[in-house]
Image (cartoon, rainbow, N blue to C red):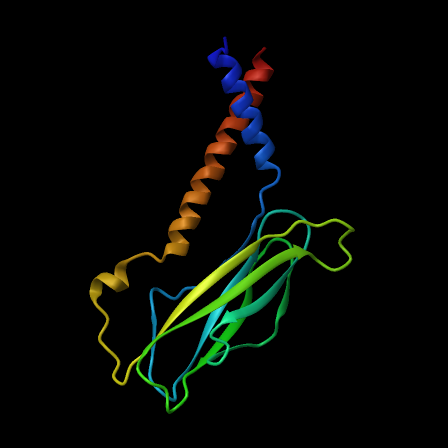
Length: 181
């Protein structure tokens, strides 16, 4: 019969093991909702590349998988130094003068890996950043509810922060408990 205490100990070890393989890199942009544009208009969306945890630099390989006819990247690879959160990867969206009204999807993929020369084995992650570009002849007035809502990226960061805090509390509890024995 499996004891609850044994299950709890296994769970704690699993959580601690997962804590050491966390990838702390991230990609964010501050656009909330659709990007509304008119024919002939150009806008730039800045993706914010982050590498806050760890001592190693991370390289981001960037690729436009969908929408490359209206979107271009300044470059396709970015080196993000350790402990930084402000490396910008600009994506320029240009709508042709003869564009028809409608919605266009732009998918930007970010892949991470160790910086060049970082070692023989590296593990990376991939992130898809979808952008919906709406082409309209006239620009609509945004609703107050849309301006007040948090972007989904910020909501995800809040959940990640809460998870990290819970993990830290568990680790501190275990260390203090071990010292008291």
